[in-house]
Image 1 (cartoon, rainbow, N blue to C red):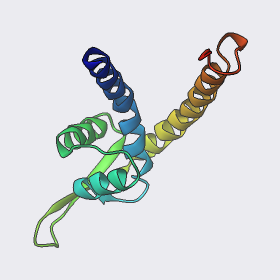
Image 2 (cartoon, one colour; image 1 turned 45 degrees about the horizontal axis):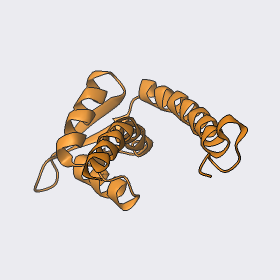
Image 3 (cartoon, rainbow, N blue to C red; image 1 turned 120 degrees about the vertical axis):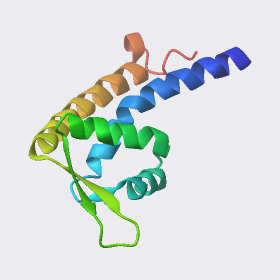
Image 4 (spheres, rainbow, N blue to C red; image 1 turned 90 degrees about the horizontal axis):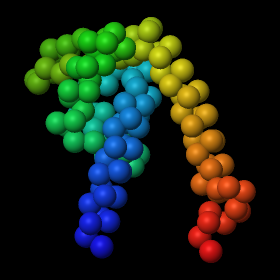
Length: 121
C-alpha cells in the first residue's frame, strides 16, 4: 500500500504542475502580489507553496505573460503582477484547451470502452 501511495503522490504532483499555472493566470486580471495569490489559491482549494509560486511568477513574467510593478507606498514593498495583453490571450487559449481536455477525459473516465460504470465491476 505504501508503494501505491508514493505513486499516487507523484502523479498528483505532476497533475498539479500545469493546473497551478492556469490557476495563477486566472487570478491576475487584477494586480496581485505573491502572498495574496498564495492565499486566494489556497482559499479556493489550490494550495501552492511560496517556493513554488515565486519562481513560476518570475518565469511567466520572463515569458512575457505577466507584467509587474513594485508598490513602495506600504511599509513593506510589494511586487504586483498582472496579465500582459499577450498573457490574457494565452490564458484565454489555455482555458479553451482546458475545457476540451476536461470534457474528453470526463467522457473517457465515465465511459471507458463504452462501459458506463468506469470498468469497476
